[in-house]
Length: 438
Image 1: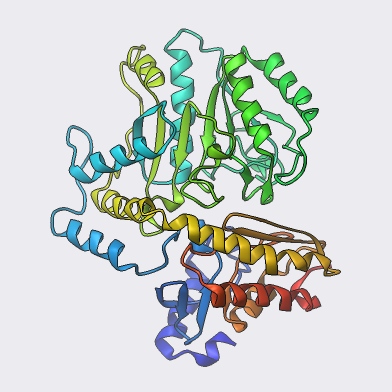
Image 2 (image 1 turned 135 degrees about the vertical axis):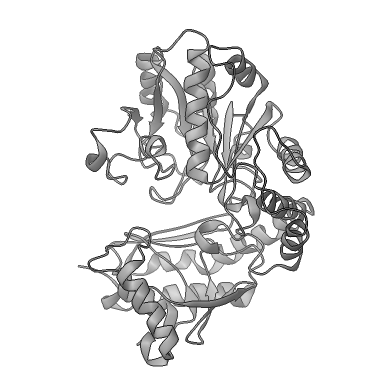
């Protein structure tokens, strides 16, 4: 259907894309359709075929302030006039220094050292390497494993993949080469349910049994994202911090998806009023403009590593602290600093609670849930991705479900009309059997 509205150049582009360009989580022998984008502005993605789609995904949860934001655009233009990139080994620059200052100011107080990298997965790799090198520097190399919980997701690179859910992460394909880590049961107490601390008995058993070999515990604060869009109770997160301290295990908070306002607090950790030993940031750091990530740690961790055998931290990406990325990240954080995001996320949450949660009564729906700027409709049957994606485009929205989860994380600037279109589109496809597999 898309090709009927395309000119020859656009058709040739799509044909080449289909034959040669590998998209995420997509077969090359039978690829899912890809839609050619012409431009994007505000909350809208404009396709080459003319459709204007309300974006419900924030381009995989990263575009906080909308597309083509004048302040973020200007930050890139200004920085381009000075330098697009310079190596960070032996050199430094104002955009990176200012960014690190801002990150230290807004994250929990014990986090005082910042390592900049170029993607969320790499920031997790850095966090894992930090924890391993930290214990090695204390002559405790036996502490070389990670403890985490099932249903988690931390990225697609190798160390990050080793702490993703063993089933959802398809570990069996890479089992022979992945780190052998330890998985506790996933949190069970829902964010909005009364807290039941009985599940901590099993969690503490893992800490007690394995603490001599565990370097760090890693978890996504409050929201388990790609592992199932699960919202768990803040008391569980608070207990994780207590157990890490009790059993001398470093606490890694993966705030790549939850950080910078998405859950209704600036960081997921804020819901439990805890401070991790290491924090990972990514996705939203540049407002969705460029790839950039940060791993923050305490003075104690940095000093222990620096005084160890290597005398330094053994990592250094080529595009570490890219000036363009740092400049736009500074502009994005300045927008957050106005505090407007709090009203924006509160509005999104209120609207979705009023209009998305009632879809729970639909016969196709198992559960609906909302937290901050996140809305989830969990269905009984898995979606038919090609069919449902096409229908969403026809309905004027961009929503990318997976499995049994139709979820939205719209840009913070989304208004009532935007959100209304997203909810209406979800409501519409729920009535269409062809959008779901048997």
